[in-house]
Image (tube, one colour):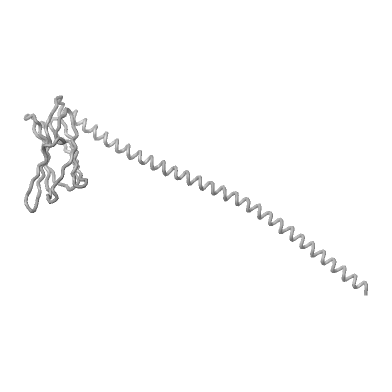
Length: 219
């Protein structure tokens, strides 16, 4: 009987020891896995932090590139505008310096009219078409024809300081005028008249194109 009890107690002890070893081994394995997971988590956190820094850097670079691109585009637009202005000015001077075959000495080279509010603003480029070294003086006038209150009407704009000219090669005239609200313009005649009677006046008739007119007269 005692042997049986001892035998059973030995088996229980062995089983208990075996269970303890299994638990210890499982605990160690879990601990190793936990450490490995923590290390992996730290690596991923560092990688995520680096990615956030890289994203912020790329955003900064992108913003700088956008600003730089906008600045370059603005410079290009300004350069293009300057180029066009210089090109037009050069073309105008070339026409002035060319010996013209036309008997027309006094000439309006370009006319621009645009409306701002109630005022019509104009810009007139006037020149001599021959290699003439004397000053030429005179005035420019507008003759507008149309309807007012259902009746034919005409309006002459002249005798202003802005429309007077005196130049040797070319001159730019700028000014403005106001039209009656009920005046429906249909036709515009522009004249450049020299004080020297021998010089023929320059006359051009245009169809009124509304609030904006820009025309360049040929030689």
